[in-house]
Image 1: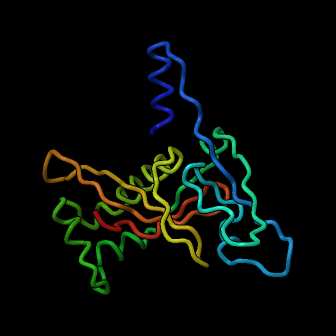
Image 2: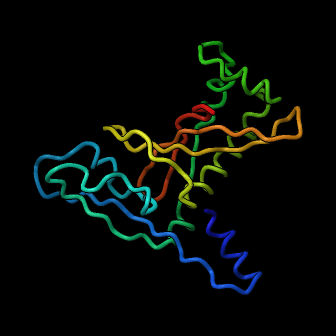
Length: 185
């Protein structure tokens, strides 16, 4: 659901706006000498209430969940990506990666000259979908919590769109970082 679009529609049709989505902030409380690496990585990360990692995360977990006002999610969340994820990685400009992802993008009409646009568009859509709660929880380990977000871009060679999964890592205070620009269809 895109909350802001629903609010706009309600205003246009003079209807009651939808209730704002509920979000959690994960807090790792330092109550012992033993600390779970996964809980430490979740500390201060924000998740839509329905899509929060399992809590309590393990027996004797001292973490707590706090509410995050949706206005804070809307105004303070950020997305980021390293240009190196697009060039040389995605378009394999140095010939080091056996993934063949560059062939898919070439089929859709994209080349390395489109890398900056793709980076910007994926960041923009990733952030919009994250704050709308339109993500899927992925693997959680000592490196952190991964999420998947579906992105849609126009084909450059046809009048249609293509969509694919992108992979992100969740960081404290509403930050998401792109870890893979193409994670599958």
